Length: 280
Image 1 (cartoon, rainbow, N blue to C red):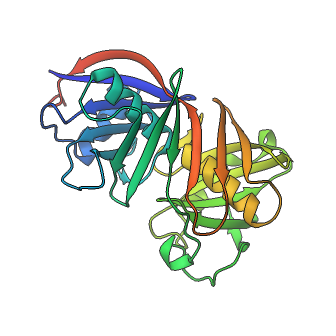
Image 2: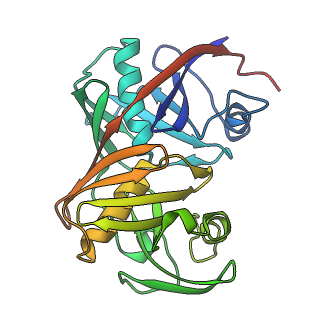
């Protein structure tokens, strides 16, 4: 039986495994079963902390979505991984944890009282690098038939691809239809996280997210970062923003091009358990 922790960041929930103390193999099919809320443990993502041979990192960090696909970035998950490392006493630093991902590195700083700040790296805006195909670089793109809607959106990457749509009221946004249609649109060959943003003031926004590989979630840290970055680039919000999500609030700070974006918020531990990873 393999130990795990159930954790969440503002309701964005995770099953977390320690692959530092002993090797653990998670593949797409196994991740999909673990994430199933009726046949498995149930979660939005499965997280692994594992050894790394990179000299600029303390641990490896892998992310599997509920559909079994592997992701490059999860800001809420990074905070939970940092708490998991401290709670389990895995060794190494706990005040500042450097996590190696498929796409780069995330630094997570403990702020006290189970609050953490994660550096999600420098955002990318070039369409080919997001990736977004069929468009030249801009702060506004348009697609004319997304679930029967004409959609204007911004697009960028913070280690994973994001499309950001401005709305007057997130409560009335057609997330259920537009979200999956845009997530899997051919313009995004690696699919995309779809954010619906309502700007309340220059330092306060509301956000709902249809997350790539997971569907609608209570919170998505990288989407909160992407939505804030988009608002800053277009002159609509300031450099530090409170982002309200269905599961609670995070803080995002970004000082401009070629600078990393920072995401601050809680990491919550729910329970510990064990699972037979060979079950079917």
